[in-house]
Image 1 (cartoon, rainbow, N blue to C red):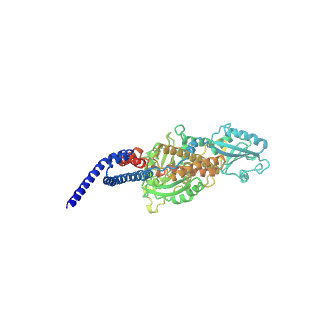
Image 2: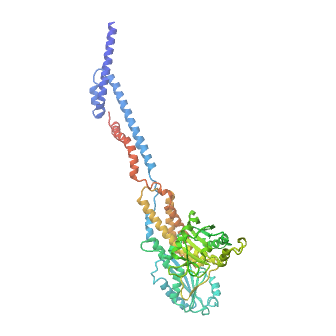
Amino acid sequence: MQRVIGEIFSRTERDAYRRAVCAKKRIARAAVLANCKTRKIKLANAYTGAHTIAAVDTSCLAFVREAEKCRVYASISFAVLLLGIGLPLWWETTAVPRVPLPYSGISELSQHQLRIHQRLLLGCLEPERSGIFAVEMMSRLTDDGKSDIFRISLSHFATNNTSIGRAKKMSDLDKAVLGFDLKEGDILVLEAPEALGEDFVHVTAGRAIYFGSKTDGEKLAMVLRRWLMRDSALSLTRNALAKPTEFSLDVENRRRFPASPNYDILLTIVNPEPENIELDFDVERIARQYIEPFTRELGIVANFSVKSQSLYMMPLGVKPTKTPDGHYALSESLLPQIITPLEKKLASQVSLYPTVNLVIYVVPCSTAPLHIYLRNGRRHRTNIDLETFHSPRWGGITLVNPPEEHCLSQAKAVVPQQQQRAFQPDEKAIVRVLLTQLRLLLGITNKEPIEGASIAPLEGLKPRDWELDELLRIRTVEQLTSAKLTLQSLARLLRGISNIVITDTVGDRINAALKLIEIATKLLDDADLVRAFLASKEAFCEAEAAFTDPSLLALLYFPDDQKYAVYIPLFLPVMIPVLFSLKNIKNYLFCSD
């Protein structure tokens, strides 16, 4: 019994002692872990004693080390998860994708000089005259070598022993010209025999100019520069686009529609009083028979879509003034007020491309005949049936006055309306006006008369060859200059705002536009006008597509300060404990027990 009681007391004492030692070790654990260098000394002093005490100390120390190991591994896992996975993933998902752009190449565009290589072929009757006249023409055409947009190469030859020297009529010269291999942009200047005249300049419908043996070189150079080459208009177009504050557009540039790969031509006839005036005018046939063939001749310039429509019950929008002569007067200052109400009904704004509006407005009998008066008080046209005007970069309007007999029969009702004859406007006059307006709005200008110089009449609906060359030159200059300015503006924008996304599509378009600009510039210098125009057209389209790409606006209005304001309250409370635990991880991994 005493032995059993002694064993119970000894076991109780050992348990109490063990609990006291473990409690003491738990209290000392903070000090043990705080100073890694003195851990062994403290543990040795704490655990010296009997064999039983050493066993207890060993189990307690293992427990402490296991707990410390779990805490460190938990800290490591949190740090790896947050810093190794979470932070890179957040950075990757919130980073703005920006494809590298050729900023240096775009900045060098302003240093590129746009030069058009113009090839001239001069043929004179005598070899001596051809050489002397060639030197004179080069001096006059280049302002003694100071031309800033043309690089002229002139080759001369004698025609005394050819069919040109034996020509008796202009048609003979036209046949002789067919033997020359003239490309787009080339100009052939031929001296005509004396039988055709001595002092004249005649510009053909092709790419040839005839002049008399006594024609002054100054007159010939004036015809070339003002009618065919138009170097001043090209320089003004380039300078006005590049430096709008220093140069202002002239009348022709303000009237011409801006460059575009596609145009819509909307032909509209308006009959405001269909109950009083019955029209016999097929606007759809006019569009199909006249407008579409003309636009096909300009197919290289752009894609044209011709549409037609008829509108009714649309008033003029202004009140004309009745004159003592019995007709109605419409002041030039009131013409814009006619366009505004018409534009609301034309539905031209639904098109994605620039729309050329050609409107035929039949004047009601209540205000007929209607005539336009200029600001100086004079009549605009002497034709009693038609009055025309056009608005720059919008279109043209033709006012058709019904005949007086038709209006009188309507007013007196002499003949029943069912038996009255329908009003037939002058189709040829209207078509001639429509084509003239269309030519002006697309960039084919009317030439100022030069004394002693003439131009061959148009052959059907086809524009003259040199007119098409002139249009290609000015469109090439306009498209190249616009593409350069667009790329430079876009480069400044993308450099200044780092939040704008630059996708692969935008980057490819910018690189393609830059390359096409360089190609078009080189082709112009090589006198390859058609390919230069096509390259400039493609460069213009690529630059505009890159500038208007919707992806550029994705993060434009989400600056960095707003980004930090969103993410800092989310990440900062999580990051502080993780950052402080890095010290304990370091002590555990790099300090020995």
